[in-house]
Length: 267
Length: 299
Image (cartoon, rainbow over all chains, first blue to last red; front, top):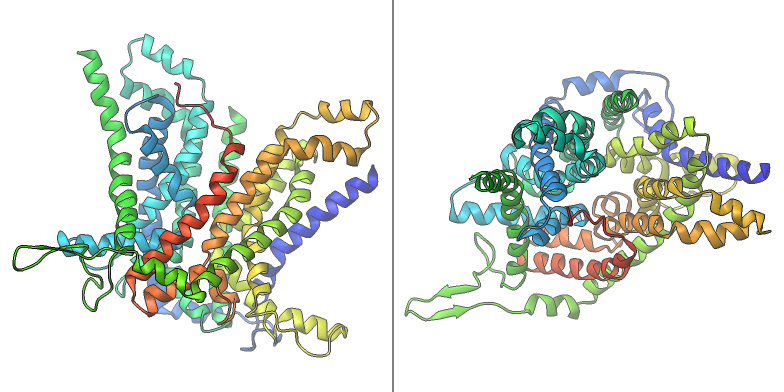
């Protein structure tokens, strides 16, 4: 019995080593004074200072942040509405199509979504004259389209689990559906909304493939900048940049996770 | 009157997501299908319209399966599809072999440990995918860390060529997609009724036999869910083969990218996309019966 438990925890340890070792090594080498990425030349933070001076990286990071916030906010609204439709509306004409359209972006390979979005934008520009070229707008639209489904999944399971008699009680006491939603339903599903928002935010700030199709010379998000740098090879600046991204995102997520867990426990 | 109001309210709630998905998901998707049937040309947009009004009032129809016969006739495309399926299948198997024991260990750990352990599995997913793939370049390349350590230990005499091979792509995929396997498996294993195992033990069943006869069949939905979450994105993957694979790593995502960005052949790129979906629909159909419907529709 002990041997079996030991083997199991051994496997778990192996998986965690596999998951964390590469990132840890990359972080360590971002403090390497040598330009040779795999030879240790002493401790240095110079790559971080070089990073702060890189205009292109800073612009891209700012654009990515704006896109991610807009995307997460729009996707949370649309995704929540879609979840309400799926959980509360029962049968209606067009339900099958709607269910399919909500589920499809979850399993669609990103490269196909990206191609489809670009072809749509080009077609629309040709016939309607909008959107003019590739810009922040096209990136946000494309990101919302693929990330709202993820919000729907998160919110849907929460809505499905909640006690519907609370809504019915409010309704019996004369509250109108809109009032019931904002006074009863929304506070109950709020943690799911927060989780969905964060998920949409990360999906957007991390996306390479879809952004590659729908971004243009004037609007280049951070992952595209990193991707084109990485294609040229490993460099200590990218290690530093990657470390910053990992630490910032990791800390934000750990914090958000704690908040969500704490809320769950209070209930 | 009240019924009318209610219907109107429901319409207002449903309209935004319905309209958004129709305009920005369904229509683009149909556009890809349409363009996959059209002919390439030089110009903007770089394809011929399917139906054209000619000067003399007749209608010219430019639609055909020519792009698809090109795909079937050229071994490059067929090999790329087969190789993508092969690499994705191996990656899925490796994820399952690594992820199952991990998910099992977490599900059977003391309950206070489960959430933190689970968060540790999920945390890499929340950090950048691109950066996690990038981290492997420094490890796998000929003058990288892995070769450095192996040379220093004297295990090998000259650097191993792992970078720019299918093996590197495979490592990158298992690394990136492992959390997608562990999370559904854990959700499934945690819900399992442990008294079934006790019953098996009471009836004289040995632990390993009980695992094969009870736990494994019961966790089948988790295995299928996890495998789909790994397999489907792995088939269409572009970033991993582009960064870790070599010029001769043939995968369909890379081919689509090259057709679109390098050759600017939109019709063929669209045909590659449509064919990729057809290839993916088959495994989804096969495994669909295992996924139970949540049955919310009857509300």
